[in-house]
Length: 539
Ligand code: N01
Image (cartoon, rainbow, N blue to C red; front, top):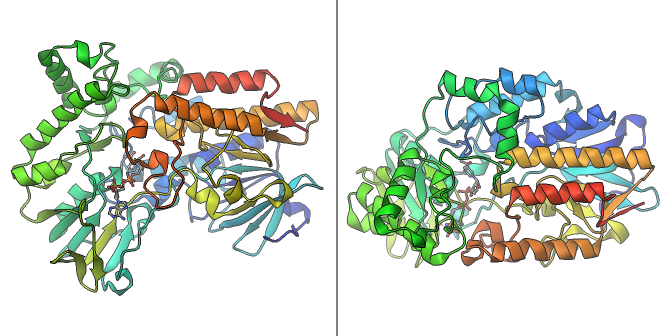
């Protein structure tokens, strides 16, 4: 059991402890201060920015367009900040996070380079005791997990890996000082969003690149470009209306071409080709709105998949390589990737693709990677193998609610939350963009702001009514988990082994974690608040 003796000196007794100083933690701190709460943020990293602090790999860039991927809570902030590209790169987003921290003077209440090891609810005192790796314990009435959805890496360890003589880097824990690939033979394992962004840039820098692909991925061109001053001005002239309109889309963001309401199967082959071509040329997730039924009808979905496969064959010169790069799965089931020159990279004479879908990687040797009888000589190994998404970071801490119940036990069959905000038996603990909320299927910053606003309103309402605790009921959580899965079951999402289902991490329970559909979710959260927090028990 973790330490149960909080330091009760006034400076270590908080109203609220917030874990994480990414976009969620920063805004939660800002709101907590507005409520007059004594707050402390603990952050493992040495700076703010969360996912954008850690994912510094070459080519890291947001797939949601810049004018939407930013906070909306402060009109001056959104008017002042200038984005330089259609999709912002990691350095620019990190600069923005730092700007927000400075502008709202947030750093004073953030303790960096501090990992929370445990959080335990003391039933007698109705407070949480939080212990860190700095051997300190503090107490707080409320705990907010602003720990991010993609913050714990999935880093498989291959046989022999310890003996590898070169450097190994995970895209999600990229060294601050960067990695010099010049003159090096590099291997990348993993071809999800991170790998697809990093591979073209690494190929340009390295002497030779070998890509190890377990599952081929669909990728649509991003067509990134500088953002024109007039484009920014148009949005800024009516920023709040723009935000309001975007919140009504299923993912909480708008795309450059509207959803085509026609089902793909009702269109002629020519109509389909024209539509797909136009959206391929426009770039971005707009492609997934080509027809209304791509996310719900497998036959319709297959027409889009076939279009992308044909594109891969057009781009990639070697037919054998093109075949290996062509997925045969449902498009959009694993998160669709956006790319900048990904497929074209395989036309380079200094880039090889190794298909490990059948036999896998046998071992890492001191000088390379062994697959069957083939040894690939490598100086630097890049793991683009993704994350233990949505639950990994929460379960890595020792979190204990009523009767010492651990979160690991509570979630042994998969995460159980109510609204992705509250967990039964864990009073006064909130999860921002937790499992069961739209989170990773949306513009994350929009979802974060909606959660932080809801939590802040809840804290204010509790104070006004004199309540000390709030806790999701078991029944509400069970019904909510069933609802999240029912919604997913009406789509193509459960048909593949994606990280949305936890299927990428060996042994993780297979449960669809995020909720599809931002607007109905917001409506539900608002209804719950308006009905005196129905589904929660107030004490
Ligand atoms: O991770 P992934 P990611 N042996 O899980 C392979 C967000 N994101 O970091 O598909 C060999 O998608 C794995 O193979 P398979 C975005 O939400 C956003 O790329 O499991 N290979 C797969 O190819 C995204 O979805 C942005 O068979 C192994 C790859 O590694 C999420 O982060 C940018 C393996 C992992 O792909 C995660 O993306 C980047 C093993 N043992 C990320 N284990 C933007 O907004 C795993 N793989 C731009």
